[in-house]
Image (cartoon, rainbow, N blue to C red):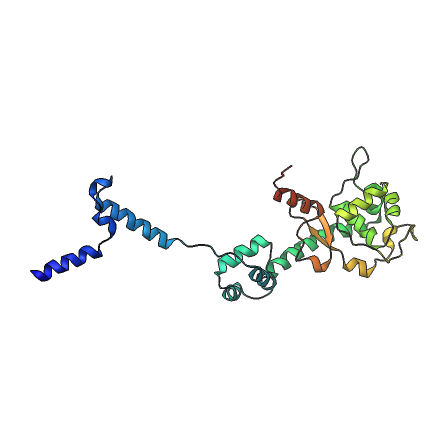
Length: 252
């Protein structure tokens, strides 16, 4: 009898403090209150916090993801799941090599069809073929930008290009800047065409290698970039400006 009394006192001391409170202080029975507290404790234990990406992890992902390294191996190096690695790479705009090859091949096929039109047919390279509005303003689409790029890589001056297409000097300069055409500082520019057809002049190999044609994912227009910037730059000049305005909260 004495042992049972001592055992009961021991269990009473081990009971939670809320068990000793009077029942009238609660709007629910003690059993329901106990179940509620237990469920909250379980839910708190199951809650997990997201681990933020550090600068070193982002740098490693940027260098490893565009290579032939498997996503599973990259995830093991970073201590994350493959799905988390793929989601982060998609947010950063990274692509796998196979995807890059397919996208580049499709873009090259599309561009080669347009570029070869005025190479094979000299009449298509005449100023009359340059797209313009009814008022005479230039329409900078895929065809006109490729015409501008072809004369640009043949080292014709902006003044000659403007005169050849019947445009203004500033219009050609701004279009070249927005299209991402490289600077030609140090080159001797041609102010006149040595032949009747300006496109018959040979291209400058150095300048042509710095003009990789791509299509902007926002404005859907053609722009050119240096091969080293292929992994960093994803949008054209106008597309990048639009991304900046959206990031600042301005959607107009």
